[in-house]
Length: 222
Image 1 (cartoon, helix red, strand yellow):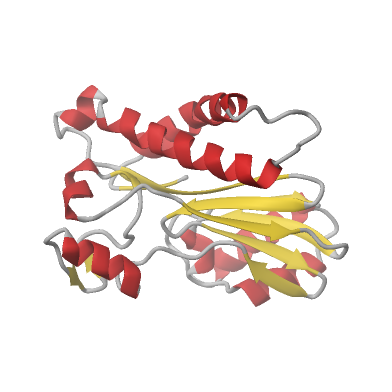
Image 2 (cartoon, helix red, strand yellow):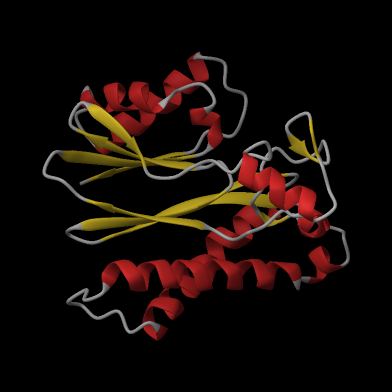
């Protein structure tokens, strides 16, 4: 979760989303044998993330307009054979596969044709590549004052099959991706002896390249 306009939504989401997700997985009857994993994971992400955004909109500070913060998000559920990724905004997931890097999510920017069309259909506009000249992402949690202008919390969902040479899964905020692309990320991880070293190396690289945005990097060994 990468917050903007304040940190309340990001921290609230981090605390409360896991229960939303486990409740949704239980409701979808995901069993230990993981039968139907891909479809159940997608359904659980969709329902739990939208439930989280609805909950946020009814918090007193948000409903009153006192808190106008928001957050992007990216998360994955992993089975022995596949990964299901859900993203909202421009936090991004990347798979280090051999010497290559495979993007698992797509950033939601206001100038993307489909995102721009939704924003304009809501009676808003994209200026300086931002919603109403303000928000740099077209999908986010919170940001309730911008929901009527087409900003959506709905996640984009993708399923990817795991392969034998998949080494690492990276989930990171745009403080990394603004200055480090997927290929460079993969090269850094190839030189890392473990996930922690890889995460720290990516953080240092982003800082050395002048990133002034939030830099959060999670590396998962596969």
